[in-house]
Amino acid sequence: MHAAVLRYRVMAYITGVVLIVLCFVGIPLQIAGHPAVANDVGVLHGILYIIYLVCAWMLSRKLALTNGQTVILLLAGTVPVMTFIVERWATRRFINPALAAAPSAEPVSR
Amino acid sequence: METPGPALQGTQGAAPVWRFLITPRWIGWHVLMVLAFWGMLWLGDWQLHRALSGNGLSWAYTFEWPLFAGFAVVFWAKTIRDEFRIRRGGGEVPEGAEAVSAAQSLPAGLGTAQVQQPADDADDAELAKYNAYLARLNDEVKGTHGKRYGFR
Image (cartoon, rainbow over all chains, first blue to last red; front, top):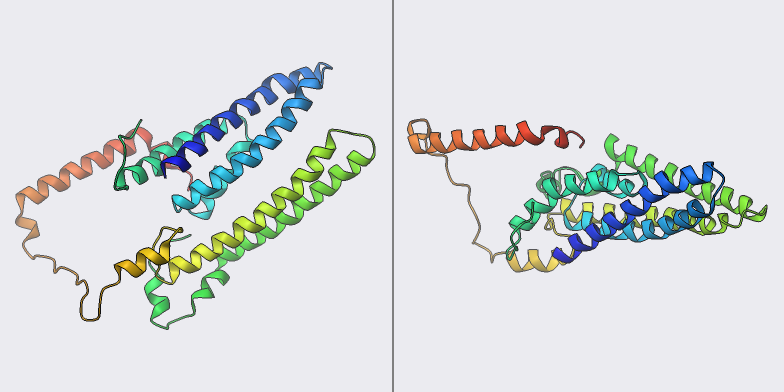
């Protein structure tokens, strides 16, 4: 469980940061006539999102989320800033309770 | 994955377990998944045409969209398989659920019984105090983060 949470968190933050760079640096530069950043970062986000999907999916199965909650978790990687919001939501609502219920839970971070 | 409560009904022969697949909620999910699958294949096809007409960047997305479509199918199949497992009375934990439930099953004659509710709950001052404490905690949580719990 801890490993799945860690994998999800790492990918959520990396994917989130890259998507913010893409949307708030790459796209303006592309509009200004310099498409190189948007092209490279876009492909990078595409690759990272594939990994994010797998990590988020594995976590959602461990937490036994509903279909709707799973969809929110998976699609968060495509909306700028949303990975951070959804990561906090998932932590408060599902991850912390699940870790608290686990037999050998480490102290839960807030 | 709705409440696992109806698992007992399935074992008592009222309705076959697979019936949950044709409830309106699940049919809605099926339709959404079919649309998403074909939509992603269509996007992959579109990127292929763009790639063939000279947009080199589109090659990455030409392979990515079909991959996402494949993910959708695999994820959906596993979701349904898990749901069957839960409704047939297995544990909530997908991995190793059979082993856990087998280990927990008791020999014939042994079992759990529901404890009868004592009649004098209303007079229990300590219980009332504890319930008030729980209610206060509940209010606090809802007051501070209620908005985060909005989307379900």
